[in-house]
Length: 199
Length: 253
Image (tube, rainbow over the protein chains, first blue to last red):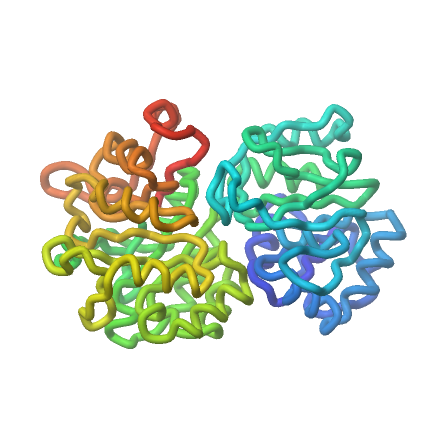
């Protein structure tokens, strides 16, 4: 079964591909948007600035294929870090639009937050009571976070938050999932998570 | 912290002597197995010798790691940073670039985000009189340099006590406290860690994370090579010894 890893040229899809391969799946790094029917799931990683990534969604022709894949609802569309934030409408970080497949926007952490920003932490998660069953056992570890903006999602979209700060860590609806942390940088915990999400 | 010189993993002592550690790819594999929080890879010759960044080596190292990796050494432009990010590194660490070309540094932050750009601020208690050391040994008042780093959009400051490099005598806690007070981004202690107690003290002084090289690579009176990391109970000890809160993890850097 193969998984497409969207390559927007904004860092780090290589590590995601490595981890997806390590769980026994075929990971294809795909630069240009195209017919997505050959892949079971699509992973949208991202590091960096919202506008830089949004520009690349258009420049590389990924916006339409991703919107279509998301609306088909057959396979999972998984956004990681900035990729998760791109599933929303917009971000305080920039002026361009996200994919808007989930109804939320991204906001900057307040200057008087309990932690220093960028928030770079290994965190455990606290799952929402109506998080899907399969997600519960896959989210028992600790995961690496590194961000200055967060998914300001309504409660009904949030599946999990960080244990200590209640920051939205996993949001989703149907087959669309956004994870703020980096499973590809979270050792066996991240691997277990990806394995459950992509099965 | 894992230092590279001419394609090999080394540990510098007082930044002059070097102990050969071994094959860097193998060492990354070991640290990965030990589930280290983060690896800071610094090529200590890349900037001074102009040798450039060994992308092939970094690619092999990144392929072994399922943890965050930072690279420093010879990053002199957005393109060189991009080359490193494309290999799978989370952050780039810069030092000289902040002194010589802050505009390039700002571009890296604007493109990849503040969390991807780390400033190594070098201080030498014996020689720099509390100032930050620039390339070619120039000195800049510390507060001024820290302000410049933040203006460039740096998201993390590694305070590197060069005089304590490899010495395992403890961090410069007073310096750490001063920097943590002045900046609002995470501060990483680096240079001098010799024991678990040193790591606790670093976190207590205001560091968000603590880095160690010799502590995790050398052992015993003859400085034998031993790649190691913290055990589960060490993390509990670190958490309990914290003055502030217990959330922030130590980093194997």
